Image (tube, rainbow, N blue to C red):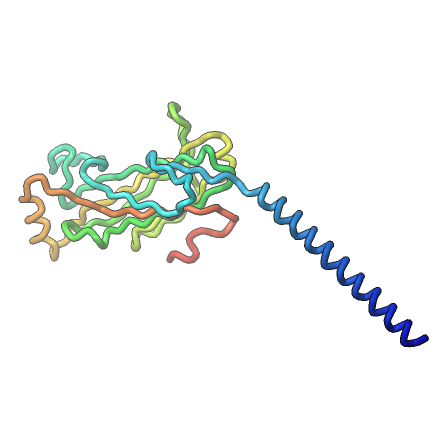
Amino acid sequence: MKKLLRILVLIMLIITLFQIASMYALYKEQLEGEYTSLLGVWSIKVNESDLSSGGENLTFNMTEDNLTYIDSEHVKSQKLAPGTQAYFEIVIDPTNTDVSVLYTLNMKLEDVTTAKLKLVNVENYFQKPGETEQFTNDNVYTNNEISQHEAVIPLTRINDKYLNHIRLYFEWENVEDNNASDSELGQTENAKINIPLEINLKQYTGEVIGNENG
């Protein structure tokens, strides 16, 4: 009798474990299905370059053709020389994206061997196409020493169809140790400055920006 009871208990235990495993598999399948349905659309353009394919990194080259020079009384208009500044503008279009965006810009100034350049200022604001009203992006972090800028595009701005404008200002530093190369560049006809700029974008999940970059 005891032997039969043990067998019955064992059979019931096996059936119970099988039912639990089946219920867990069903729950997992439903959970994964719900999670997949909640994933947001990732469709972003940066200066008209489409990142919809899922890529997170993009590299631009800032050259004479896409720089805007800040005029100085000591330098010919739309020319860059030691002591003067210029800026490069980036426009991020996240309007078809369903999640907040975190991006990091790295200006590779150390790769520029023809001039001593320094990141001196970053303007970051939201603006709708065809409108003049601008809203400053307050959720930003800039490290001028390593020429890095990080910012968040919140979902509220994305839902309201705003574009994110970033202007990176840099200065050609007038450094005495660099006088020889500065003079050589200034005497070279049609000399070009080429500055690599790397952009990394990902979904923003609420982390504090800037903590890992300093």
